[in-house]
Length: 214
Image (cartoon, rainbow, N blue to C red; front, side, top):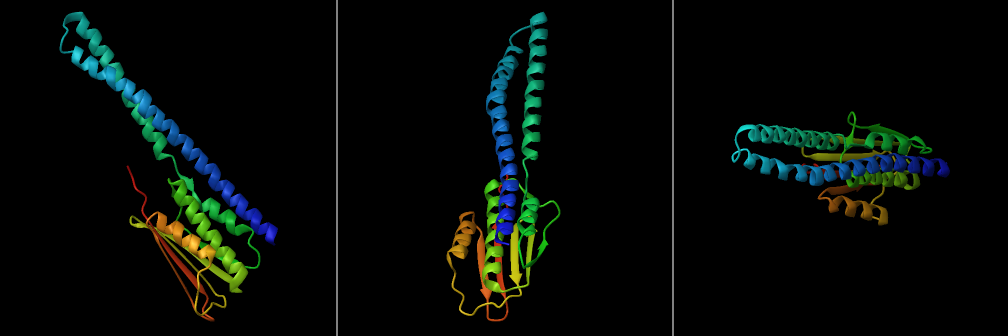
């Protein structure tokens, strides 16, 4: 059972890593296109614009033709950069489904938005690690039969809620796992709270602010 759980965690991490690597490479290429090709085309376009006001006759025709080509190329570069940036999404749903697949002796009820994705590798890793910590704690300590894990996303941010039907605990004291999870959430401006009492299970609520768009 332990090996199955570890294997599921590794597969989930692999899914996330593959998407994160792809996103990082797309972002690198799009930046190179924008910073190098885009800027190099902007200079000639501006010079040709000035030249079009200084020449006449056949020379003007050639300058205008070159200016049209430069503008067309610049537009193509911007379109490619925009297309690459719009496709840089990490599939968190797939990683979470891999994570829960091999968990022993616990029924995990996962409720996610359709096509739950993010463009931020750090945020994707944070959500996966929070879910992993919650599942591990439930298996080890809660003596629960069921764990409900839900994620909701809106314009304000992402809400993660988890609760179980385990034994709970009075006088809850955070261990290293919960403290680490709280610190990671706070690093990106989020909040995390935990609640528990004897016989009433354990609940974790985390909120992450919406991704910044540039």
